[in-house]
Amino acid sequence: MKIYKFLSLILIAFTLITISSCSNNEDDDIPNTEPGNLQLKFENGFNNLGNIVLNQTTQTSSSGQKHQFSTLKYVISNISLIDENGNEFKYHYNNPDKGAFIINQADAKGGIVYANLTEIPKGNYRKIKLGLGISPTAYLIGQDGQGIFWEKAKQEGMAWSWSAGYIFAKLEGKYGTTSAYTEFMNHTGNMGDTTINGTADLYREVVLDLPTTARVSKDITPSIHILADFNQYLSGQTALILNQTNQMAMGSSPHLVSVSNNLIQMFKVDHVHND
Image 1 (cartoon, rainbow, N blue to C red):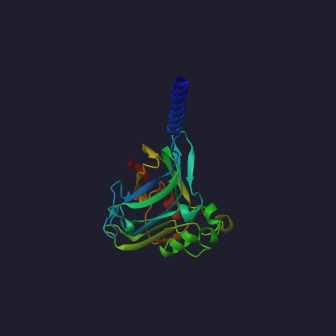
Image 2 (image 1 turned 90 degrees about the vertical axis):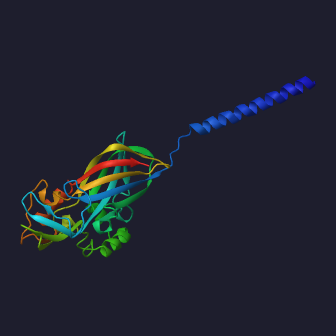
Image 3 (image 1 turned 60 degrees about the vertical axis):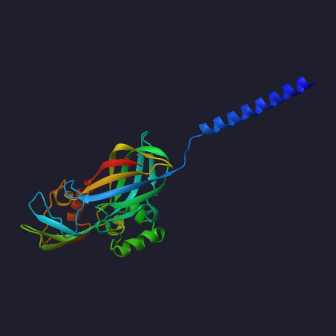
């Protein structure tokens, strides 16, 4: 009888150990799908040389004009991340309150302006999509649907009246032939409802390849270093010359349509850190 009880105890102990082992293995097999964060680092420069110093850095355009910026700001929105399987994660798409950023060169630290994204699904991302400006869809949500970003845009001087809408890119400074001495001001943006007003839509999007996979997880916050080459402003797909007809341009004139088409070509990803 004692032997029977002893064997029974051994059997029970073995069963408990087996159950515990299986339970632990099952826990180990459950993948960690917690979201993580991602940082975008914008470095504004000329011809892939970073860190424009406002009121100092001077560039010569392909047409021979000198120009420098005293103000350099633009809006980034509708950010998407595309993973290795082609799946696209849209970050607060058409929601400026949570998904739009003002990149202001005056805020640069060590030549970098930062935009921090949170609650990014765990994944290995190979491409990033950026919107320059605010899409007509987002604007038509109305002022109440984007009150936080609208107030920020007004404070940053990146908005007209609500009926006129947002400023997408604000470029101010001086230009000239032998040196930069004549003031210019180019403010691009949609003038309200482009369909009703019959005006050009200056919102633009671009998809950029990442040279290294951005591995987002709970423990890894990648940083994507994006170069913005403002040589494209006057020397892009359309060579532009500043003169008395366009040096003080605001809205969506033909000149600013060309500026917008040039600026969307300025972005490229230099490198990715997975730290």
